[in-house]
Image 1 (cartoon, rainbow, N blue to C red):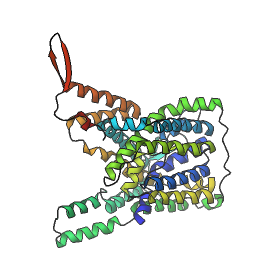
Image 2 (cartoon, rainbow, N blue to C red; image 1 turned 180 degrees about the horizontal axis):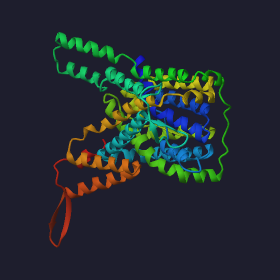
Image 3 (cartoon, one colour; image 1 turned 120 degrees about the horizontal axis):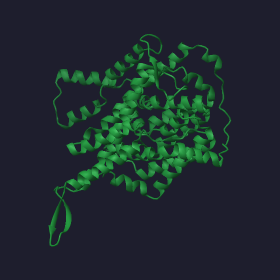
Length: 441
């Protein structure tokens, strides 16, 4: 249970900065968002039985706070509903499962690698530089000082603590391998196993998060005076035709391909990688889940959300192994939303950004490491080109398109033409293996 609670905070390095920025810049109703996302967490945790994350739709959030004029809550909701309708349609018609079956695995790995590295790059910026989420989309400003309650020393200490307690995140698999291969445990190896088990039992991410929460009140004790009890009044948004047009054109269009790739396809594939002994998540169910969540909450001003591969990797990295992790997280959000309401933004605004960067760093690296199973140079080539285009173009859809074209060109190159007669020919694969081995099963 303790490891599940520790894993529950594994994706907060992404959740908190985006929610805080939308609240301060776009007047997002924090209380409504916390209440609805808590219900999403609890329901998806019970439905899927896995630590299924509920994360902000990042592209919509980026457009809402970085472009001028900023999107209004109604326009943000319109963008979320448009994206949700698309995913709901793809899931209900079975098209999402069709895409999932036939998208090449190296392309999916490229998307995962780019998203993981993007998280890691942002995390390093959070750690090294002071951030101004209100003035811009969290770009670096001045170097972070070594000392202080949000200094480099605290962030680096948190990194060292997490590495010492969690290692590379694969201790349990080492134990299983030793048992499977019947490796005898010598006295020194037995002591090592006991020490590693003791360290892995420490809820490291939860301790780091609670430290950050404690530092909020130490940094500014006046927070206590600004807290108000009770949730805000939930009301239905008035979404005009102009809101629908702006929300769809400016925010939904760049969000839809990212949601399809990272929130559905990458999540399903990653679930099979992290939990090989369980049935892989259904692309249809995940797609419908994203649609239903947003149709339930966006009308009331809740932040548009999706399932993210980075959140799943982060929660797994810090000990989450079942749906109870996100159930615990949902229960915590529900209490905060009902008790503190919108005044909780006062606490979030003082949360040490360096500590959020540490949590985000481990989540990003865990997601990027999912790409380590590319066994051939051809697969690695496609994956790396896809990731490079995604990172430099800031578009997972662009990287995905380039990856698909590159994959097809390489397959075409490996086919030979057997001509006969007057130039009529047929194509056949030069490989003895079925090309479908390169696709997602």
